[in-house]
Image (cartoon, rainbow over all chains, first blue to last red; front, side, top):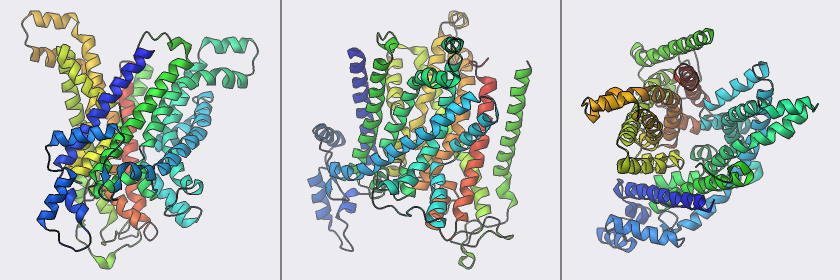
Amino acid sequence: MVVRIGKRLVQLLITLLGVTFITFSLTYMAPGDPVAMLLETGDTIISQDVVEQTRHELGLDRPFLVQYGSWLGHALTGDLGMSYSAKKPVVDKMAEAFPGTLLLATTSIVLMLLIAIPAGVMAAVYCNRWLDYILRAVSFIGISMPTFWLGLVLLYVFGYKLGMAPIATATVSLANVMLPAITMAFTLASKYMRQVRLVVLEEMNKEYVIGARARGMTERAILWRHIFPNACLPLITILGLSFGWLLGGVAVVEMVFAWPGLGKMAVQAITMRDYPLLQGFVLWAALAYMSINMLIDVSYSLLDPRLRKGGHS
Amino acid sequence: MKIMNEKKRYFITYSVLLGVMILIALIGPLCMSTDIYTSDLGRALQAPSADHWFGTDKLGRDVFARIIHGMQLSLGMSFSIVSLMAMTGTLVGVVAGFYGGKVEMVLMRLCDIMISFPGIILAIAIAGVMGGSIGNAILALTLVGWAKYARIVRSLVLKVRGEDYVTAARLSGASPFVIMRRHILPNTLPLVFVTAGMDLGTMILEVAGLSFLGFGAQPPTPEWGRMLNEGRQYLQMAPWLMVFPGVAILLVVTVFNLWSDSLRDILDPKQT
């Protein structure tokens, strides 16, 4: 068990190194000068001397590997540098955008479960009957549709036509998060429902179900007391992956609703050539996704005694 | 036998649908005389009518014509990305699986890195930092997507590497290249095709997403994601700018997904 966690930790560190290295080389080779972007204030023309001096102060005239090494060293102490555009530490800028993304992620996951679990279980119970066909058709459309387009349609209908939701959400609140969260939840639920249906169908064919039926249990009790808890286990992994992914901020959806989260922040960081901010964002997104994945993996073996001895990996 | 026929029938039906779609993408733009680039502000933001089936955009360009032109672009980009990913991944997978040892270890660690975190984040960073363009979007999505193919192919190669016919080929003096190409590669292709088929629809969605964010096709290119971005700005005044490109994406991706599901049903060895 300890060995397994250790292995996962090493894997996590290697991946983070790789990912930040890729992003760092990208921003190093990228066209456009962040220093010019940083100094730009209105129409004032900046002399070449000032540009050179700022570049020196920021350490941007050093060799590539030295720059990466220094960034890495600081990152280990929790210092991700200064954001060029906001002129404050990257960590502070990300902390401002985080509540938005966290609220959106949590609400989306809760709504997704509220849709996907009943739908998936129903589809399995009514397998190959009309209810199953309808649910599967809806989920098929859900996965074939761009999430941001669904967002635009919902924004048009509920924002403009019915006036039930705000059109541009500047503040993070439970009322404002509903529309973007429903958008995310529908797309996620379309994928998740298929999994729920499959796992429940698989469990329904196991022998303990016949046993329970023979003992005279009601179908309802068999479904919710026996089949469902067993089906939950494999579903937790996918749930964790979705949540980890959402914590990186879903840029397209945040852009549609002007939702102040990490995804929107990242898009702005790119357009403003604010590379330290982008760098911090990529590090966070990879770290969040992988740590949650790892946590799930560990809790998995705690929840399921069969996996505790851990023969396979 | 009867089940097999039914599967084949689905596959043929969806292949025909897919063929029709590709035909429209290839021939459609040629059949239209409408100019999709010249602006005519006198006709800007007109609602759908007999003259302009899907209305006109902010520069007075016909949305229907732009969507038909955009289809070629979306399908073309998706096919390019998927073939690039599949080719790179297959090459890496075959080499890693065949040679084993250090080569395999290095290549597979690289795959682990690429697979273990959400690729779209890196794709946004790559395409965005390099500057929004069609080429950069293709490159970005290929870079984050090839590893999946490498893993699948490697595991298949490991299975066939020890087969008698590979040993026989080796003993009869076949070069490693010939063994890989003639004896190993063909075994991996069915699953590569199934995976690639499933990715076609996904890539259309991701390309549209990148362009929607401004990190893909640039104006005046009639790319669907880009058109949705413009539609978003006129959501209240001209909702048709948002409706039709989205429906186009939905229809094309649905056909791709139906087709790839039916392809998987007839090709996937696990099912039979």
